[in-house]
Length: 157
Image (cartoon, rainbow, N blue to C red; front, side):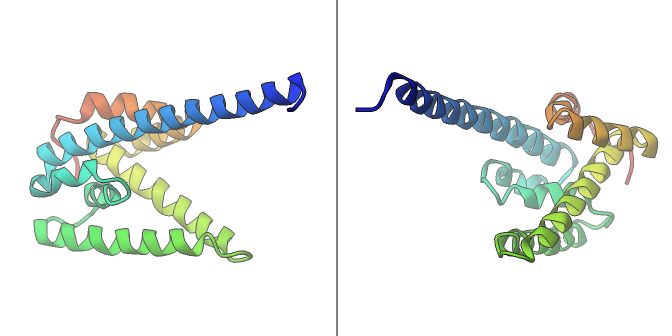
């Protein structure tokens, strides 16, 4: 039996883990809602159900940011970037070179976040500001703005 201090540390760690788990679940649900309704409104509406599948829902994120105009081209472009993202994610766990993959993952994520905000706002300056606000607030700005814009048509290509 541990000391009183050790017991409190263990309880604190377990409690902290559960708080993080609940926060992650809330973030996942909000992201799925945003992706689902954005896909229903702006396409690809036939694949909106993917928003509810963890990890695979990034396919929609890449579809929203695609610069292609034809639905088949958008789907192909999104699939290519989703595969690249998945490969980089696996590489990121390899010692010594993993940090390069993490930098690439961050760059891709920020670019596609910019593209999503740009398509919602139609203004490059606002999109950059909204990306910065999302990064500073650890995604809270994205969740709020995304919930507001989820059912509105994109204003830019």
